[in-house]
Length: 242
Picture 1 (tube, rainbow, N blue to C red):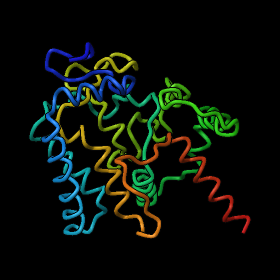
Picture 2 (cartoon, rainbow, N blue to C red):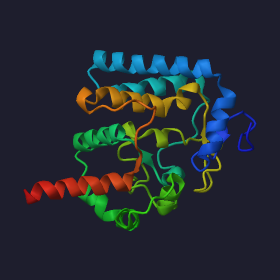
Picture 3 (cartoon, one colour):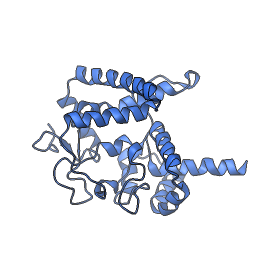
Picture 4 (spheres, one colour):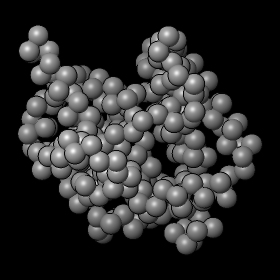
């Protein structure tokens, strides 16, 4: 097991050590268990979504929460504890679409979100304009120690019900976090976390029209919240020009 494991066998600091997290997952869960959980969760998300008339992604979030309640220790995180909300959060197109649905349902003004997040948005925009090819960890470093665009003034997540997998995997099962360095953040507690990103990638692949689909490789492109906000603003501006 890697050094970043606590005495309960839970991986800590996973967000900043993605390679170590992958090694940990492979060491903790047998390959056949991972594959079986993946297939079951994809099918269950589609079936639950159809039965409850919700998106497959929202169905997956519901199933993941049920798994936590059955298999994981009680969370120590609570509303107003936002230490882990001061770092980069990456998400897929499907997760971003889920956020947009929540934004519309709650009447959240994305222009206001963009305005108050200018500091980090400008950093991301500068890199995009330079067309530099940087690693995912460097994308995170662009916005580290800055509040998530969707962190409200009350230190609560504005889109909590549809928060992406990145957020769901950084949680505290021990004492309340004492800093923003995520010492108490833990991942890889249950096998459903290990297959979460692949499940989302598959759900996104399967909802794509067949004529647009490419061969499924188990992943989907990830972008920072700030990048998605830039794309949303560009799309909005394009519509206005037309």
